[in-house]
Structures are given as structure tokens and as C-alpha cells.
Length: 316
Image (cartoon, rainbow, N blue to C red; front, side):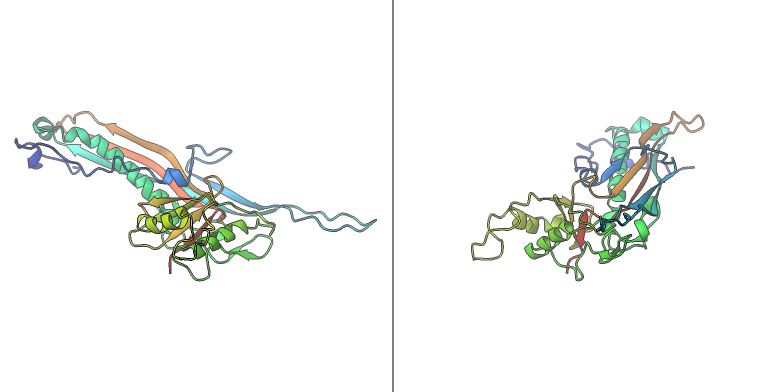
């Protein structure tokens, strides 16, 4: 028999309480939807129901010289590799005995459906942030709906992303830096210098500095100061007119010096596929026991294909 809430939950049936307080996460903003691409249940095309693949294709190379009377050079796109998003199911349930339902004095049990919804939203945030929290490694934390490596099984943040037509590019420094004016300007330069798979410029304009909440104060000093912070020389803050906003994440581990500089959504390739939106069911009373059950369930896949549109550092 499934674990049940019984009248051993004594405080909810004893008179004298003024209020029952749930440690719910209601009211906390859902952050993943502000920074990641949430895909529809049916992503489009011939995408499957259990999984779908994304394919990388390198563009044509650049034009070359053609001498008089000579033939033109032909080129074809290069079909490269795929990355797969596979769904995983998450669920949670509650069982109430008949006696507990009848004897609950404060409506505590009636609030459990809302608690299930909050728990589901929390888990979606946790799963949605997995590509960021595991961005600096290509393997080790995959599974349960998370594809850790992108195209070529590469980490999201790396010093040597292989380009299809040759060469490499980095979206992190060779030695990670703490968040500072110098580190952030280097990150902007890196995104501005992003090449496509054929090595041609594909400049990306960042719009968001994502930091754990402990770095909020540094981010504010860097981006909101009219003059260059940490100097008494009255230098103009070079980041003041870049239009970059900062956002605090409560799902990047506490105490972590990691920070990310990101392009707008849809210009990066960090994706969340909720194959089945959270649904909640309440069963009728069990004939033998009189118990009732509530269940929440959803299916999700997260990961990335392309690495462009984001720069990261784990801090010094």
C-alpha cells in the first residue's frame, strides 16, 4: 500500500492552531522561461513523440576569385551531426486516509493539490537549469531527460569548439575569471567575434548577464554605474551603453562564482521540451479503505545543440 497521510498527522486534527503554514515555493518567479527556449509539445516537422533530433549543417563557403575564362567553383553544404532530446517522466503523489480527510480541522489536506503544482514547477526549474549547471563538462550528469553534450558531444561552454569546415572557437577564457569589467568586456568581444561553421563572422549581441544571487551586487555595480567602478579616475563605464541587463538565478548553486553572458532567447540553442505539461488527477475514494489519492506528472527533455549565443566562466 502506498504511503498515506493518516491521523498520525496529529497537529492537523488537534484544536487550537491559528494558522497552518506551508513551505511552498509559490510566488517565486519561474526563471527558466525567461532565459531558455521552451519548445511546444509537438516541436514541429517530423519530430517524434518520445524523442527528436536536431541536425547541424554547415553553410556554403565564401566566394572565391574566378579568372577570366575559367570555370566557377562549386560547393555544397556539409551535413554534420545530430543531437537527441529524449523525454523523461517526473511525478509525485499523495494519499489521504478517509479518517484524515474527515478529521482535518484546518483545510491542510485541501491545500495539497496546490503543493503538488508548486513542486512540479520547482522540478521544471531544476531540470531547465541543468544545461547551465553542467555547462562546463561534456559528460557526467546526463540522463533523466538531460542531454549534456551538444553537437559532436561537446560541452556547452568550452575553449575549443570544433568548426565543421575547420578551426575552433572558444566561448570561455583559457583561465576562468571572476566577474569584473575586464572579464565582461572580454566576454562581449568573444560573442561579437563568433564565427559560423564555415568560419565567416556571425556576430552575436549579448543582452543578459546571468549570475547567482550572491553576485547580484557586483553585476549591479558593473552594469548600472555611470562611471567605471573600482577606480577614482572618473573614467566612463564602457558597459553603460551596451544595453545588457542582469538577472539573478536561484537555481545556480549557492556559493558558486559561475556567471554567463547570453544572447536573447531563440538566438542561443539551450532548449526545454515539455513533452507532457504538468497534469494533476484526484482519484475517488478507494472502495476498501475510503482513501483518496492525488497525483501530478509531466514529461520533459532538456539540452543544447549549438554552443553559440552564450559565454561562461566558473570564476577564478
